[in-house]
Image (cartoon, rainbow, N blue to C red; front, side, top):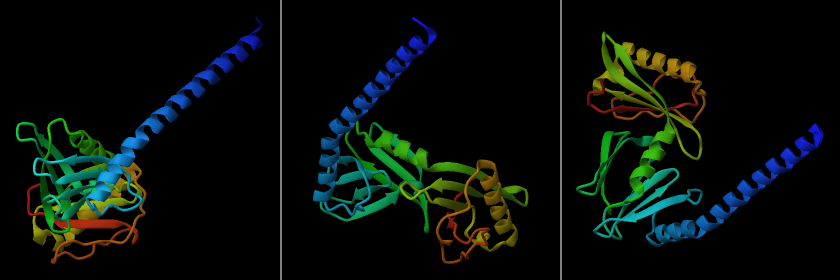
Length: 237
């Protein structure tokens, strides 16, 4: 066998391997479709306010009968069977904790009114714990402490919003009044610029959003970026 013939045989073998892997992926996708349709149907039947573009990844039911629905973009929680739904976007969740003894999933996050917590009582062996951790990790781009006057005054985090890809900048302040201090605002702006440059984060997004009554819009390098200021009143460093 000549070198050319050997190369042709190797190429055919490699092509066959690629085709085999592609067929396996297609079979796996086809096998998963019924489960996906079942989860989506369960969420729809429970009147979960899920957007048409969202892909339902998991549905779980707590001991009381209330549902929790996880999509690629967010988690939806029922306060009671047939009750009100709450939506928590994955980019807003900062911590996922599971208490196996109590079967309690605790989600901690940051929003316009500061730090929030949501407790979900679920069945043992629920897939929502690992799924929540994976989804939250997938949104994280970079974070850094902000120092002013020789102490940590804020935490700046860049998160990617699933689906849209928009970058959300979250600033957690140690004190609600700190948002009015020019030196702290300048330090926060410098921290954002540093993370952009160091992590290669694009300076594009939506509109600037300020959170809290006493907070004002931050001066941003790009007026299209989304900055959520949360005066949490909790120590971050």
